[in-house]
Amino acid sequence: MKLECGIAIDLPDSEKLLLYLHSLFIITGQVGVMFCNAFIEETLHLLKNSIFLYKDGLFDCAFYSVRQASEVINTMLYLTQNPSKRKEWASKGHFPLDSKIRNQLEKLSLDYKEIKSLIPEYFNKQENLIKQTHKIIHKQGLDTFYKARKPYAERYGYNQEEETKLFLEVLKYTIGLLLIVFILIDPLCLILTD
Image 1 (tube, one colour):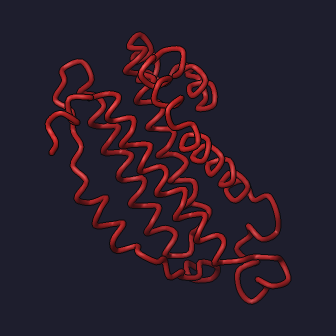
Image 2 (tube, helix red, strand yellow):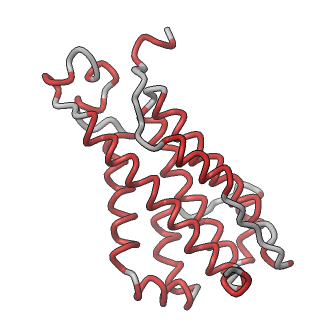
């Protein structure tokens, strides 16, 4: 049953991406935001898992993992800027959805607002890529069905090359978002690097 619909996909540069994610060492030592280390670790696991899922042909799960990584990044920054919400988040009480968190980040963090104003095309592109993944995650269109893969790809309009390009692009932009947000949380890391 496992192999029935999941068709293995050759993902270009997957080994290079996995090695990069595995060797990416970003950690904060700032007392007030040390909880972020768990968020960073979770984000990296989600991104690595997305690559494995995609290669195994579990494309919708792979896109979901990348989207979830993006949401974890946004939540991490939100909680650094709004510490009073940490208990609410930890207790699994009512918590805003990612779209509301993104809207509030510019109000809560002047640094975030400034960075976003300096490179708006990056943030817009990452957000638009995430929106594109919603179509796949929520199965909008026959080309997002497992049965549309093989042998019916042509009939249902499935294009593996385009989908793989989208996956790699959203993955790389989300890695970039993690790095940008980490710098916002711990700007000293820039000073300590060469």
